Image (cartoon, rainbow, N blue to C red; front, side):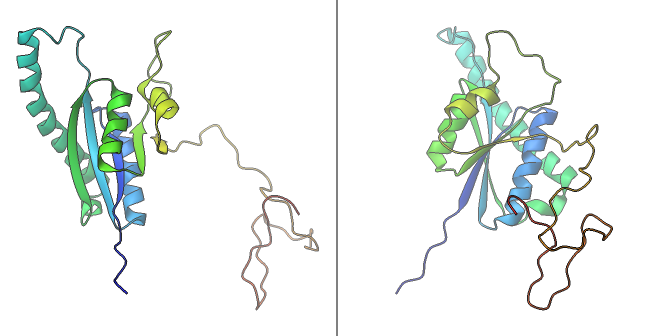
Length: 198
């Protein structure tokens, strides 16, 4: 019997050069640490004017595509360096610049490279959305045919922990103090709490 071929796990990461996209880069790198055969496809989408038939605008676009690719590579590498210089070792990094509506083009790259998921960043409450216009992340979630991860920083400010997150197990000594006590049994290392039904 022949050896099984291990396929790459591919993810598309949307890059718009904002702080929000930096969270997407960080989230993708955390996934890559868990999945050793990860291949990350960083994608910047240039939205264009409907007047693209103008020859002058086409020349401008052609020049801007090259500049966008250089900026994309530099932004990703700088962000990776800030988060963790060694994190990208051994991970395949690919770069794409596309032209068109953001959600459509991110999804198209996912189709083209046979990606398993798409990672995008979205700022929390910082950006006002125009009435009658959905954000690119909303559109992507609605239309994508692969899982979509919306990355933003972890922030539990204003939230309190539950006094006792899980109910006690049947027969547990309820007089014991501490929320996360453990049972010391030789045949099981399970905790004294269970989630869901008792």
